Image 1: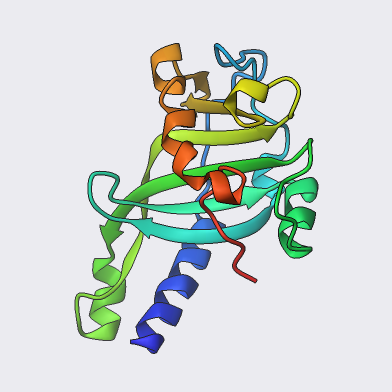
Image 2: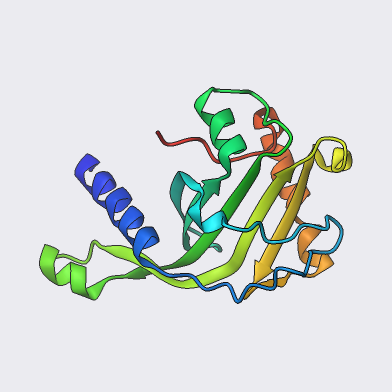
Length: 172
């Protein structure tokens, strides 16, 4: 089992490194409500963690952080400082026939097509005080998601209040 987990994490890391995700960037467009734009260079941020989400999400995701967020994770801060930005990229979770042939079993899954664009959490405790200090954004094919989508972000993150509304833990 532990070997399978290591293999999955290694495969996920390789997939994340190998897949070129072109977001069709619309840098001048900001999301409604929060006014967040796609941060330049976010694809070069450090990896916080990877995950496979089952159920309705059924995706493989990578969570990245800017230097401020990474420092908060590494130093074990209970709250993220202003300026922290966390990015979530997700892909369809698909079986790799090529890898399965090598392993001799249907056990390898890789990142497929991008899912639900790229999402960001931006910490600004004054500007976003009504949403726990976080602003939320989602860009689908480089275009800002509509207001209805963004209104679901904070209610989803409220159960993680004890961790400053962030679900992802740092994977050293």
